[in-house]
Amino acid sequence: MSFYSNEELLAAGFSSVGDNVRISNKVSLYGISGTIGHHVRIDDFCILKGRIVLENYIHVGSFCLLTGVCGEVYLQDGSVLSSGVHVYTGSDDYRADVLSSGAVPQELVKTIKGDVRLGKGSIVGAQSLLLPNTYIEDGASIGAHCVVYGRVPAGAVMVSGTGKAKKTKQRDYKKIVNLVEQLTGNSKQTKSM
Image (cartoon, rainbow, N blue to C red; front, top):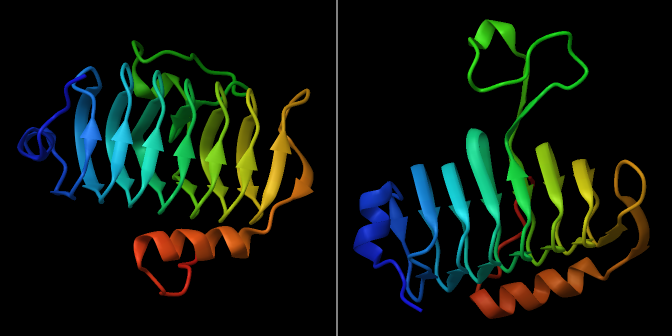
């Protein structure tokens, strides 16, 4: 497997790239801005668009889509996206009496826009969908095939069901954050999202 060089990632639009960054050269990059920290891995066949901020010790599995075109995708230290996760900062409003297409004039569509943020040590399971204005707090765990929007509390364990993902139990998010901070050497207070 071959990877983009730091120089290639900077040329693609990232303003800074850390050490030990392994982003497959089979990843597609479009209109990129943002930053990449240290020890970041992105596997084959992912698509990254727009503003994306990746802190340290991040893993993005194959076939993920991160689109920061209508907001920012922000993954904090130690967070993980399993294979096939799609992250959207913009989505057509399917409830509105308008058209839904990127091929029609903007005055004929209604778009929901907002950032997507993952807290320290959070994990999102395979084939999940994160919609605009989603805030997954520290240490939360999202099971496979979940549709997630809104705020997910720190340490929450979410599973799929009909409609929005549902909380089933609680993880010790303080322990998870402590482990991430030990890994990164960062003892700063957790930033509010």
